Image (cartoon, rainbow, N blue to C red):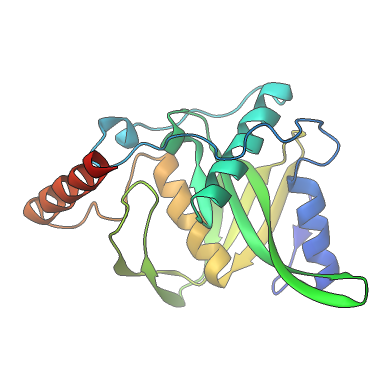
Length: 207
């Protein structure tokens, strides 16, 4: 188990990326557009996800397809339950700067957290306009902890403990809520949630 203090250096970010991406697993580029996602008010989204116990090719395949789905839908995070898989898996992308042929490019790279658990959170709050791929078209200003200490496993089954702050911490908290059967609109009034659900279904019927 490793402990990385925050804020991380560029070298520490590199370590996290190497530990949580699919390099060396061999899953390959499985899809270009990913899965169809569940949307509110689908009751499956209220189910609690189960821990991952097998760290194998099937897990790598799920993570790879989650990556494709997240990027295709221009999301910054995704949980397996949103694709109808009740396993405690989340994927998230973080910004990354790369150099190629003397030029610098800003890009983003996905990484995975298996069986994530928040062990500690700071009292400082971070405000953000929160949205969700399972609640398309709706945003709500929310406050969450500015930094969290996360215990998780890599796709190889290695246990890690790292601090995440800012937007990364916000996304992690949002995705773990999904694993626990919670949505960011749960505290809204029943009437408002009903309107959101009807609007989503109307939009989907037009596609």
